[in-house]
Image (cartoon, rainbow, N blue to C red; front, side, top):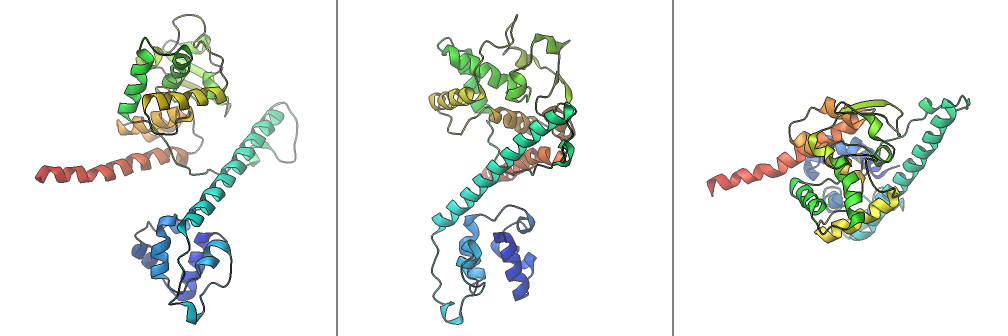
Length: 305
């Protein structure tokens, strides 16, 4: 059982409603029903609200669900660091498994397209979505990167990498698509291409901001770096510019989506632009922007000070 399932089992046994539990812990009721384990920050509150719950059973499957009566008043505080490590390790394992499944599905798709019949067909294989964090750049950070790209002292390798990165920020293209598009894909101010990941045909309007990052003639971009090398260069660039975030190429797509929604974009149009097969993937960015608004509501307190 997952940690969430164990908590639900405990609540059912004690006759405590999930609503009361989530209200006491100040968490959204949907957290318990989600596939992701609740964060370690709730551990101390759980101990307070559920004094007879065996934390070792909850986290590590050790012992019984309920503490012996004589131990209820001598509950040992389990180090939260161990719990955090458990959650992090489990999340990393899940992400690796999902990534392997994605790769398997990719080659299964290629095989099926070539007419090879397999016992499990491409469209029958469902890859779960792992809800990880969505790192994106804010307006100030984008401007910092743009000014560095525009400067006369930028390294040539940095210039080439940032040309692709900034192009992605203004188009949402994946690195796999940017690596293969050519000038023939640009038709009358639109970018027409087949997605390397999904195989779907996409046609996107290219903004003037995006056009400045491609070469005026010949190849669109000057480098032939691998995605791994590009991510290494981006890490170094972030360090040089004082951007304290883990910047990978995929951050460009998250930045596009988040900034698009911040500036009033439509979520359905965003789904099409991002080439998402499921609207739930796109809704993540709506939730990010909603959270930003909630976090900034307190700024209105300054009106009275």
